Length: 203
Image 1 (cartoon, rainbow, N blue to C red):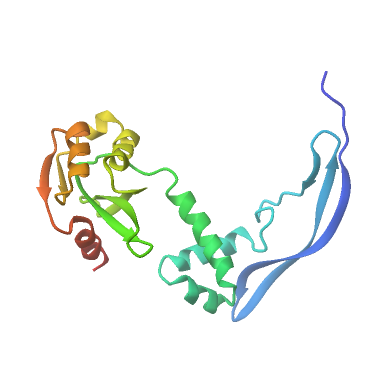
Image 2 (image 1 turned 180 degrees about the horizontal axis):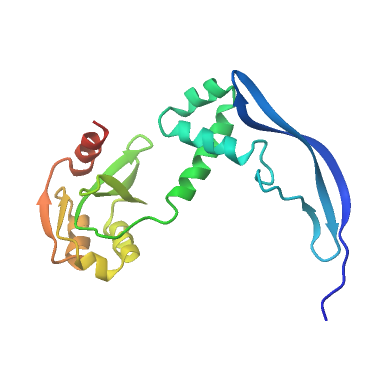
């Protein structure tokens, strides 16, 4: 038998959601937002189809902010839209996480691998670039063999065996990982494999 329960309004408050501007004017949606008291689930915030639960912006406005962040620095977007830069940063981070949550590992033929230092050179990131499509496909913390091993484990043995060539500097941990997971790939020693590829793509 289906459990019989009723939902009641717990409280409500007036909220203002930033929306797409109209000409030079900022636009806001004003609405009453409710919290409901469910006997089975407890107190829950009303879900809106056009806005995330705790956001102060509509989804379409957040889409607009994210698209601007693709071509402008976060500080410039914040100044242009008169938003706090932390708000812009959180929107950008959320959309980047969504965009790259399912990386495309298909047709990996020619790769470049290099490390990037940060935090005054005390920390490193391993970066893998798809040379054919000129895009970064994987970033991992550290620059040891185990770091690159994680990349090969993520793409799987079948894809690793299909890699034809890898540009990399003469860093033994990377070479050991390549030899183990992609022994059929030709290794091309390049002093700046990833950095030069990114610069060419940006140019």
